[in-house]
Amino acid sequence: MVKYTSLRPVLWTENLDDTIGFYIHVLGFSLLGRNDDWQWASICKDDVQIMLSAPNEHEKFEGIGFTGSFYFNVSEVNNLWEELKAKAKICYEIETFDWGMREFAVYDNNGYILQFGEPVDEISKAE
Image (cartoon, rainbow, N blue to C red; front, side, top):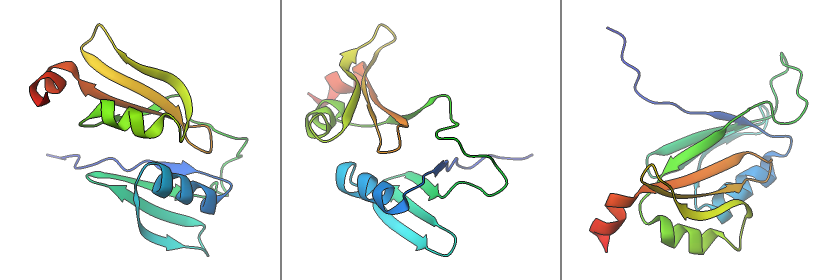
């Protein structure tokens, strides 16, 4: 039986340096690897890994082609909000939703929506 073991999105960017900088300096990711000939990099933070790449030569790139958001499950979402609200462009401010998540969203330097959420029941356990 096939088992899926992880998902590593590849985010296209027209400026690899700026994108690496955003994820490292704003979100605290680390650079795992980079190949300038390929215009490719791999970054990580804790258990999350993302690849960054110049647009694929086989696809017509006209800006962001992704029609969704990237949702990060985090601990201490309130602290993360306090850290990021002045560093990143806000999509929506922190809020507790009816479905039991406390979350907020920002845009990265390319315009991708990055959502960060924590279950409300985990927040109350930590306090």
